[in-house]
Length: 193
Image 1 (spheres, helix red, strand yellow):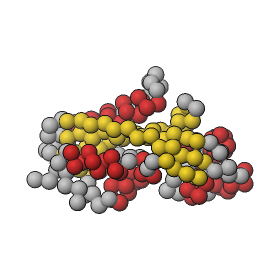
Image 2: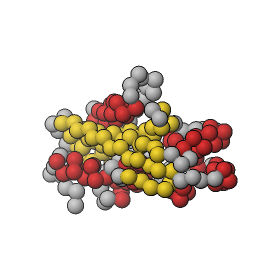
Image 3: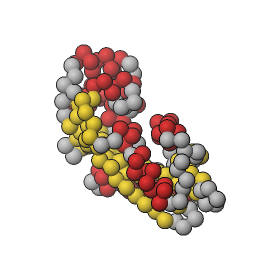
């Protein structure tokens, strides 16, 4: 019997990643309430949130399924960067990141509801930003794209031209490292081909 795969997120970008590798899956958004005020290091917070989002969805699933949850943060000099929501904050964040090396931390948690086996994996991706200009920042802000994007940009959007180099995995920046997910699904007995 094939295990059902469940994505514990309603994000269209996360859905797109699983579709990209040809997985058949169901979407069940997590109702876990994130507490971003927890006194944890960024990596620990990402792991904690990833696990609880997956657990919350797994607790509502009937039958044999594999639930995939995750969380992704961008860290610059120990500080987490969030969605800017305003043009001024987006401008500040994009100026701050110019020419810098950033670290995107992703924790993915996969749970088998038949056995309650849980596996969490971390991925850290280094993102090298170009020395983009003030005019490029203003043109990007004018698109409206950065306002609802974590850390004020998305690699799958227009901003991709202003990233100089990525060390590790593009999909990890969007949400989860597909090569790592692939290996975990095989370990959990999911037919990935």
